[in-house]
Image 1 (tube, rainbow, N blue to C red):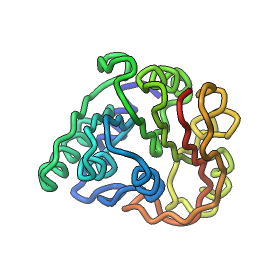
Image 2 (image 1 turned 180 degrees about the vertical axis):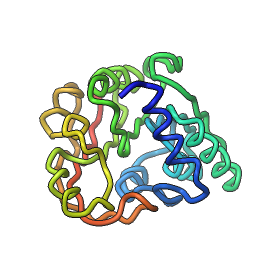
Image 3 (image 1 turned 135 degrees about the horizontal axis):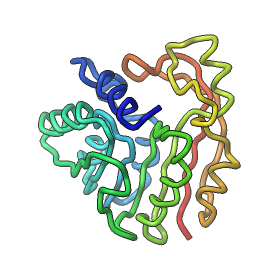
Image 4 (image 1 turned 45 degrees about the horizontal axis):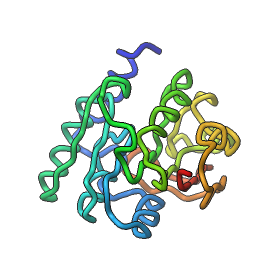
Amino acid sequence: MTQDSWTERWDERYKKEEFAYGMAPNNYLKEQLEKLVPGNILFGAEGEGRNAVFAAQKGWNVSAFDISTEGRNKATRLAEVNNVKIDYRLGLLDNLHFAEAQFDAIALIYAHFPAGIKSVYHRTLNQYLRKGGILIFEAFSKRHLEYLERNKNVGGPKDINMLFSTEELKNDFPDYEILELTESEIELSEGLFHNGTGSVIRFTGRKK
């Protein structure tokens, strides 16, 4: 899949009036953020902004990025409605000019980057997190394909190489104190495209 077709796919999903994954924050993100003192946080593949806006409401200084113009437009409107600001940048990560050790936390919530770049992105994002900073991650596991076959409404990539394993995350983020790393079956009810039982990896780590 080319970069242009990938971008078009997400613009198509996000241009509808309804929010593809709802306006409420992801449950795991909410649970983890409530344990932390607000600081600077970066959201990857942030789409329509539900998680970034929640963090901003909780006092975080929020940055985010995605490839979808339509996603950023909806995130900007959602932020305005909730009287918060987010620094939302558009494009590929290498071109977005975030700084080394800029962030106290990084959140990757269903940030299923294309298979060929996902580990590269993870290593780049690691540079942007300060020592002692927290990484919060939830995304579909490789086992999720079994769930997707039974119920397409649960959503998620159909390419196993875009899905995750615990070993892959250990390899991509090696210098972390693991606070949680689990593969779990959960019930999703997030907007139009995450509904039903799925298999996810949840990872929270502190950078050493």
